Length: 94
Image 1 (cartoon, rainbow, N blue to C red):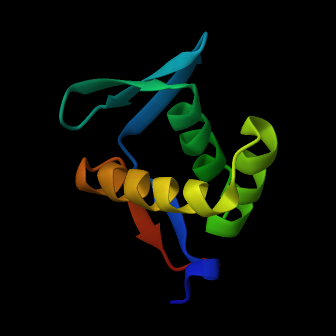
Image 2 (cartoon, rainbow, N blue to C red):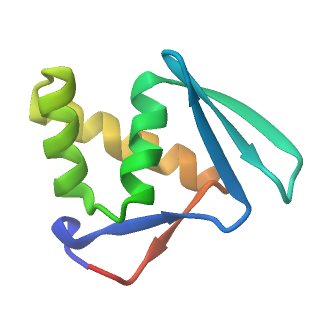
């Protein structure tokens, strides 16, 4: 699947709540609680809305006044971390 159509979704046992400038993520099946910064919790919210990678990049670049090149690399790395932690999974929807 080409990168412009990659889509991810939260795993079914994942819940999150923004709190101030960060957020709490609960992985119910594993009994884990994580704390993410403002950008991390925003990425989860955008994934939860069903945005693909280009949509997430556009939103983040506008909201945080970030360079797309560096942001794309950071987002890829962060998505790999979320996937390895069992918080997100790839989906076949565009």
